Picture 1 (cartoon, rainbow, N blue to C red):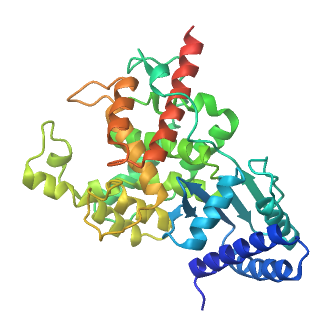
Picture 2: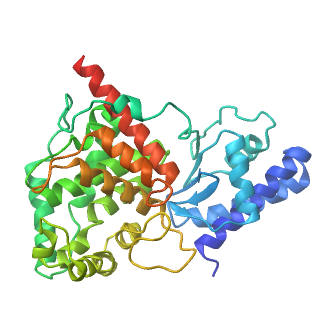
Picture 3: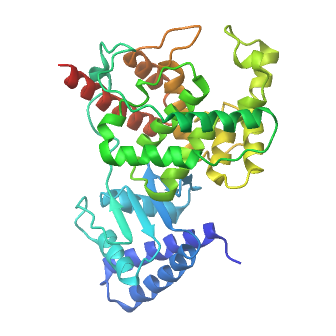
Length: 386
């Protein structure tokens, strides 16, 4: 049986060939028709089992359903064509028709580079320019860590209690039941769609004594902001939020005296702390109803961009896009949140720190995109305060 990954790669191979042939001949040429039929057969097979597929380009890298693809001639060429046509992401939804695929080939084979990409009912094309724009440093200058004229609604008490119940269950070494977490994530997604600017005060940030809950929801909000800015929607967006809520669950298996220690961990303590990604991923893998993306993110969220983080992985490992977004959100929130041993840092200082480790610890393009989101928040709140 052909795997989903193989089917998707063959779909792209057929689509690329159809695009090249259509550019050389016409969209109705017999060779183009045959290749579109082959591509449609592949993608229809995949969409029988999933509701949508997201294809995007990040820094000349092709990412399918949040998973970076190994470099190959045809995948790299497809990414180049998408970018040359001003298309940064393609969403293929269940119910996709052959005619919609014909229109996609027509858009990709068009000689009018950079034009607006048309969308249809089951095929969404979008352009997100995350590489342009002014420096993120200027809007953040002078922002204090506690300035916030916009606040997001507190999570309902019942949801906070449910989250604490979930974590207490795990602490007692009982099986995790994630009932309630999808509802929390859906609430954030709905809030973003209704009033994204207000929620960008995001994580403003929720400085409460419930650090585990606060940090998890902050990372969730920040991940959703990143994902939506890249054009990610639907089930994948919800799974990215759920993965963020559960990314640190492995810390519940680490002795509390290590988790709450105010000073720097010694070598033995840090060695124990470094076990939490594996412990968390193992626990989530054994939990019914947890998206596979959450397992991957729990395992990878401390892998640095250059793979120098932990746990140790083989050379050439490709961390999931969600894991890399979570590392960025996690890093930001850890510095932005008041802790018992230090005050929160200013946005401008955090931005400088993130820029310094961009390309080594953090994914450079995702980091730039994240800082633009935060800069937008800073501009918005400064304007509101004026």
